[in-house]
Image 1 (cartoon, rainbow, N blue to C red):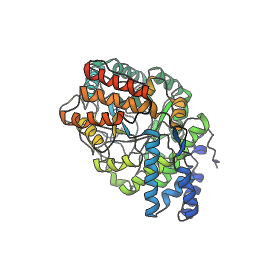
Image 2 (cartoon, one colour):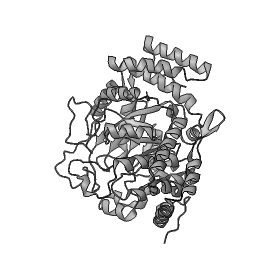
Image 3 (cartoon, rainbow, N blue to C red):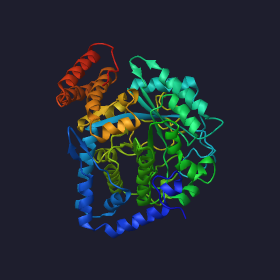
Image 4 (cartoon, rainbow, N blue to C red):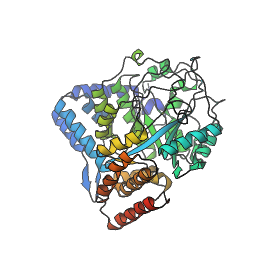
Length: 482
């Protein structure tokens, strides 16, 4: 029987089934242990250190105790601390991005995804480079600067060479004042050699959802295709980092397996990356199973309520305080609004989950990977964020200035990243307002920028940011960054 070892390179040892079961038993035994819960909450709370804050984070066992606790007063405190942590590390900024689906050809048999090989009535499509360019121009015309590219797993139709060519095309398109400055990549688990190729192509974060950490369920949900190999998939992040990729993004598709099991496994994966590489996940995504072409989410009996979904996200924020937390347009405006308070720091906006969806005036549905619940335009999402006290950020400065991996984490964990991120967010928001925003959004945005500039403590940084924003308004100069 595999033995739990966070520093092991073997999937069944760093995501250890027996350890997860023991963790769930420990959480059940201590969910009403208020002295212990008080200790855990106090450990999680941000502590002032110098000019910033530090957070200790929680172990998978500690966080599981909080998740299991049913006391409403404790849950409220969890939410409050999650908000404190998010503000301490990320301020009131919310980073915006969009997914770009390149191809829905796939050889896997995943039971929860409409791209599975046996689905013969979904149209199969793969973008040509000319079509990729049209999609990028459409996204730039919306105002996007950061993309997450997606493709099914198909060695013939979607080889690594195709992905690399698409990345090159995306970065090459400069349309009016638009440019995609960061390409994150969400493709199937691959080799160290291919991860090195992705690194050399200039990707930002490599994202791979585990779907489920429960090995038996994983193999049942992936009955055919290369994704059936649980160990190869689960160990992908190790190979990515060995291949030179600094930033990796984890995620679970909640609803496939019991959420408390997935929660513990997700945190153990983060602990594993810290133990082996000294750098935890750059991002953690929290998608839930949604309706799609031939997928009925009610077929999976592990769905969780909005209330528990909110608590789960808050507990992730307490456990992994430094990570960027992502919620997509799978979720409704109402759910996304609540999630922003408990730790989410990145959202998609104006998303289309079909292959070639952005260049078309009407939203196509025939090649969608999942139904989009929040169908607002990017402009509407930007205005909504500002009206609720958030700064929409299109910043990609850290990635392009080499503040990735351990360099980013050192700044983030010491609370110093805000010194760069706050003014960068305001400058990229100013770009958006000048180049893409509606008049209604501008009326909200410019006063917000004026107020937020007052919060920059360093006089020299403030002066530079103010001058850059003036230059953005009065010229075509763009892409200022600290």
